Length: 609
Image 1 (cartoon, rainbow, N blue to C red):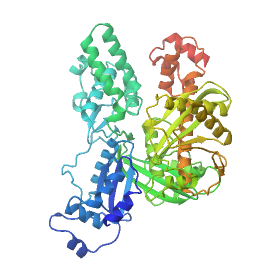
Image 2 (image 1 turned 90 degrees about the vertical axis):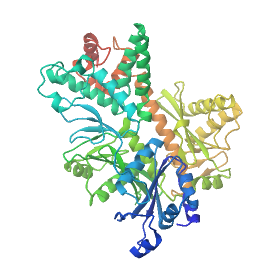
Image 3 (image 1 turned 60 degrees about the horizontal axis):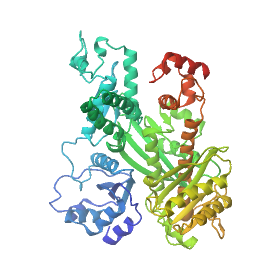
Image 4 (image 1 turned 45 degrees about the horizontal axis):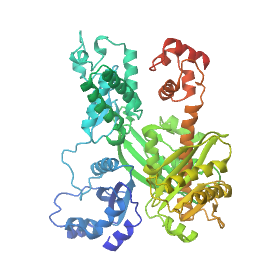
């Protein structure tokens, strides 16, 4: 690549955190390589060639576009030779800089690119493992045991150790070796210090210990309250007892626990199998016109190590994403080793494919929440942000006759026959989701879609006019709906005098037509300006539905009116069992395990449900 080509390729890349790779796909002779690389490149070249070419360099960036553009003016002769040798670029977006750091480290270890500086000791980031024993041990490790369940990797070992100490104090999980655990006739010092419940000598029953292990695992799976709630209660008790130093220490620990899943690393849970290397594939699908992109993230033993994209012809009719998934699963894995687990954004809906995967022992999951759902979201993000895409925002600006809409806000309303009415306000910047600027609003219950949309947009407009919204004004407002919803939104904008947006348009879901104040557009399915609006519309719809479901469960469930069950206990029950149906199926003993549920309340819940 020359400098102009690097700048041109960089302009198509997203301005988001992630990882980029310079790749050599063209065949070159050994003589050509030798003449182009001086003695400063000492060392033998790893044979990394294959169908995807040779990875020359892997880098991470807060802004992929800016970082890649900088290679047009290489800072050293070595990097200049790398750029000249490369003839392709690949990239993967991540949600955070931490995830980019971890993915870069794993890709460097896997591909061993000759132009990267590589650590000789090949150390990995720490993980937390629960060993495969009758009484599992919890510990930080870089080399998990066979049969263990591992979570991680994490970049901040100090925070991990703080959380582990909290886990052991709350749940009493052992941290000793098997040698120390076996054949004991009395508990060790950890038991006296309150760090272990001593399953080795039967101070705690095997069933109760297993239950404590499961509670601890739920925390690493993303349920922060499994650890934060007990620590908070202990902190409050210490404060009431005027043990202020201990309360302050617990306060600091609580802050680490509550922020653990946001900043300690990108956790991926993967159960280890006989060979010690359980594998997970995460798939995301983007269907645009008559083509589809499937993004695959691959994790081995809890670490995200690979990412690739594949193009398919999109089928016609309904459930296009499901059809793409079914086709991809059969075609991609027919000649490849199946992973132990596959995470999908939605069911593939093919009974024959399901039977094949089940017979092969593959666990197929459509996660609804937690870390697995976060991975699926990341795969979807990569599917939508494929390399070399068209200038969607430029096409949208040209078609609508407005300035380029760098910032788009999408609005949708969700409710159940006028109950638990909520509105979503999502934000996309430069064609990509800006989740930090998402907002949601609980609206008055009314079974009128137009009135609900008017109230939602008026709420946003009034906050902007009064200076109470800390976000910049959008260039374009996108309303989920047709002419009625658009007119309601325009009424709200006009009534408040908000002059921020350059344009307000609506996208009707059934017909996929774009409605503006002056006309209606029926663009081709493969029109780039339609694609960007569809992404914003779909995300506004998803965000609204997710909030509506949460609010509906919170406001109206079968637990309402059950004697002894108030709002806080209801939340704890739903947090513990996941749904009212799971609460209904729980035994009295299971119900009593929930904090605040006594025997009488447990029996009342069981009988009423």
